[in-house]
Length: 153
Image (cartoon, rainbow, N blue to C red; front, side):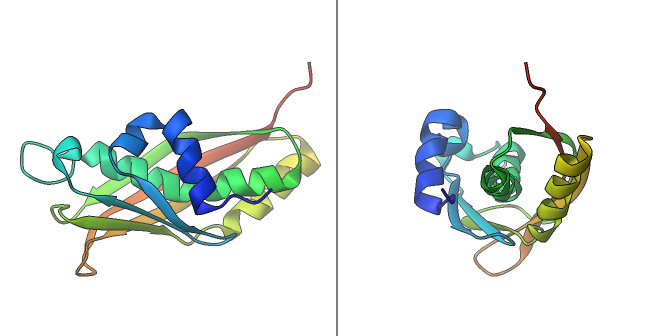
């Protein structure tokens, strides 16, 4: 069953409650691209009247991880996924509605195919760019995802 934005948002209510309560929502997803939004509000602010960096990180990670979950599910295999590293750059105060877009879904298929074929873990870097309502980049996140086949017990 393919991941849809509405199904994933329901999943996040139960499995990612911090992200859900902060307003992080998946808006679009396909095999290559994912879009997540979050709006600056009282619950996700920092003392400088902008969005807390960790909330931006949750939204950015979700834009990469939702595609990973979708493509892992499509393999029918038991595959684990984990963020091993991340890098972030903050270029402007995040206020209003911030939209995080990841267009690196094409990298996932090859990594999953390699880990299934070889049984060895694989890593890929995926980028998510957050822009405000004026189209100005407020933050950029890079996540190093690792995938590997789960061991049979």
